Image 1 (cartoon, rainbow, N blue to C red):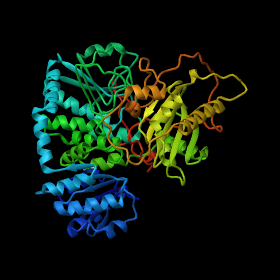
Image 2 (cartoon, helix red, strand yellow):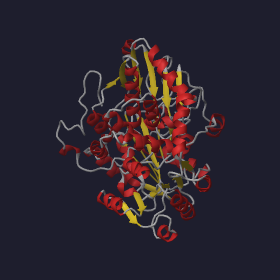
Image 3 (cartoon, rainbow, N blue to C red):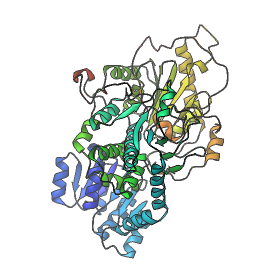
Image 4 (cartoon, one colour):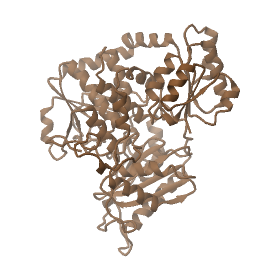
Length: 571
């Protein structure tokens, strides 16, 4: 069922559609433009050729959208459509475009019902403000810091980077090269998710995989920049004392961030959006691979413009779509899936247990933790399930991946409550992850299997957390500019001065909780229902790569399934 609705189809809406129509089955359009209606139908979009301001038309739509975009060029039509949409869909996020020549009265009426009003004048005002105001000052400061770096800049993503982190790093690298810096895009961990591997290979991004066991390799760099996370040693494996020159991130910080240049804006849905902003201000003609990567990064982190999305994300996407390679983007969105991943999804379904609308399942020992996220996504499709958590063990560590849709649960908060004191956890309201070192678990009864202990700890703690905490309603999660560190710390009982590395890449949104200092130990192997082996997860903002063809059917040199490793790059 579509969760996004577009009313009216002027050039502005057409640009937005080009940017957000990756998941065509999730989009519905109402327009009186017969020609554009036919074009959209040919692209597989649900189009209703009718008056977008007619209450009976909207009443006849069998949808409950999470977001509504009103964007014809006629101001009065937009006023009528916006008012009708607000009456029909009171809980939806409403973005209204005033159109050309809108009067003060028309704008006031639009502003009274819309969550965000966009006018042609505000676009110009924003440009001027960005050029000479605080935004412009920030751009000049970034440029100065880049020029001050002696020679070689390392742009470091968070561990196991997702598309938003990778694209942002590549874009910042392009800006640094314009300032005469030598640049290397670096990451720790792995790029194992099929979609992410296709992303890197198809766009031919040059990344260097750093080795935490070889800190001497960092001596080659004269400066360090962090993207999509904000602290050295937290969600990356840099030494915590590493001096940082640049930080650009859209996640709210839990503690003060130290760097020569810091841009932390939690009011946007993706770090890629911030990099588009800088590229525009520096008048950079964005190369097609970078434009494609940034567009996909925004799509991923906003769940196809449905989660924590801001007007700036739409504007950035509309700017990128003219340079992006949409055919390559489609290939990235449809990667193959490995047999191991399918096996883990099957085990997750077989081992599931359900408490109300919450489904939990353990899959035993696995090798590819990306499969946890894909299983958690797949289980959400089961009838009566509004939240899922799938957990397994990788190299002596329990990893958990949780998903929610239309549930009164904030998963990021719930996982921090449940596991923050014995491991690390974090994420978004509808997508989160956690990790617990098995060495932190005490086995009092050696007759009891570790599988039972892990199940008890993970399931019981998670259920207790979601039952004891009042969580905000999902479905209307959009950009948050405020973040009360003191209140959050008090509510979760986490210390700010002793943070552990977040469980996953997506946990950068709430960085990790403390690691308990209790002396735990265990030497029992974890098996669930006699199963062994399996797959692994890179937690990312949109890692819901639906299984399609078996990975073994792809050629050995297929860019969608293989990153050729060298001395500095592996996945």
